Length: 531
Image (cartoon, rainbow, N blue to C red; front, side):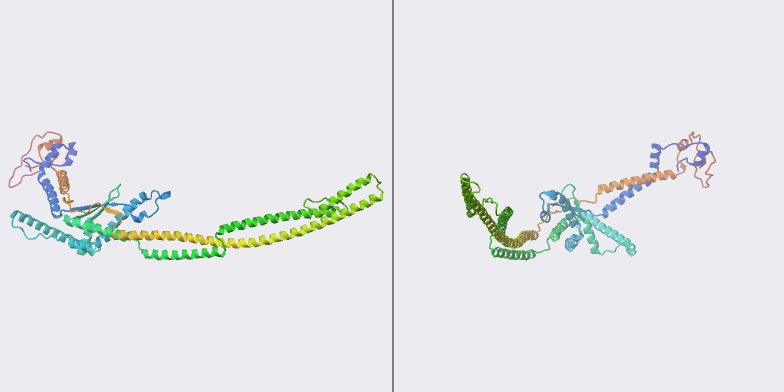
């Protein structure tokens, strides 16, 4: 304690109506200087802890390599021209990149190369100690660091035992721990707005980091080929192609038989000829039927007129019928001549009228006979046309059936031709793909193989030390503030004056005696003073 020290009762201020003053810079600096030693110890402890952490944490090196992802042959075979697929390449690019990232992140990549990585991993043997004293000191320091790391590993493993016993953690063998370390060291990062994937491998040895990354990338290319390789062999499509060609040859033979059996070079031409013939027969039959109806009508009218009436001669009448008109004209002319010389009752007139009546009856019989004969001829003609039409129609139906069968065979031939073309393209694609797979040609291109890094990637010593210093400073300030809050003593007369708001009139000095005098006074606002 200082030369004069008084103890403050906080409740005394309230009883006497005094108030505390606010915090000022002088109080803060005073408190800081009063607790400088523990504050510096806290700051030093933080820095020492950071130093120990950096000492026990090995220097890490990260080897990296970049992959550019393109539209691979496994996607480029799809149609991309026109329609809804015109932006196919752009829509598939992001999916291509994500697919490659998932292949890279698959643990099987590391698991497949585990034994190879284990064989090339450096053991970290420091060798024999050097004779030069400076190098010897460095050697011994590294030995101490290795011993400290071994202790740290033992502590961590010992702390895991109860957690593994209750099932919170799984026990890992040395190989499993090493596999997990490899898996955690292999990083895959996608660069946004690009088609680039950045891969990296972090290890304490730069050469091993580069070699391990190159081995993992080679394993990834092999896995990419295995994933996208077509499992269907080209021999399967070759057999399918042979079967399709055999079926096509059989269809060609059937088509030839149809054409030869129908005695035609083209079913389409035959169909057109049949349709033309049927149309012509239909026209002839219709004309004959119309003519028959006309003859029947004329015959009916002739019969209705009777034999005693002179019948008009039809335009298409037989010449023998037309001769009656000439004879009738001659008799009429003769009668006119007789009318000038004889009376109507004369015998000459009677004889001539009997001749005219007989001539009309003869013409009537001739017309009836001619029309009847014409009707018989027309009936035979219509029957003949009907028979020909029926036979031609039946032939056309057979021809149509043959044409339909021929058309179906033609469609099958077209489908088989398309199937043969597609199968041939598939065989060509598989042949090309097999060649590309044998050369490990994929949609990802390695920009450059990884090389051992020259500069370490971690730990960030300046950052860790800076964070340790900042946390230590905060902890030290927290300690000083807590110590001041918990302290209930006045350090000087000025503290009393500032707290009570009145000047200090006197201070009792402290004395060191064998028997301590009473240390507390009953002055208002003070618990006591040491005398």
